[in-house]
Length: 187
Image (cartoon, rainbow, N blue to C red; front, side, top):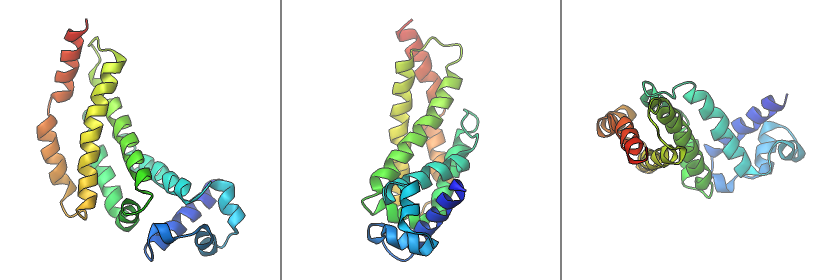
């Protein structure tokens, strides 16, 4: 029952975000739309920002699925772009509100996790320290999320496949090359 209620509250927030800015939506608005009392909301979430974070975390985990390997990372990022397009109004509302921090933190976390899975996969056979793998993942995370945030800020007009195609050209083979260089730099 808890997940059903959380999903209903999330649906209400997303629905209300079609009508007004996220910063103007109150817990009372969400509770009324969902036909529950305010205590029900607070039983599940501390505040609206907690609900925003839950929406991004739970929904995108499903959207990314198992697309976290070297051969599928582009599909994983495409699915992230598609999630953002499908939830365009909510994402733009978050992007242009005080909740932008939650969107950015979420994107950084998901990009890092996806990249770390790819780097761990590609590092098999190399003697690379964990802190070097982490460095590589953080480096690419900032580039990937920067592209996504620029795309959101520009109104999501460019086709995500075009962005990913250019990104793939830029980084083709770079994961392996970076791992090789770190492996030989610190035997």
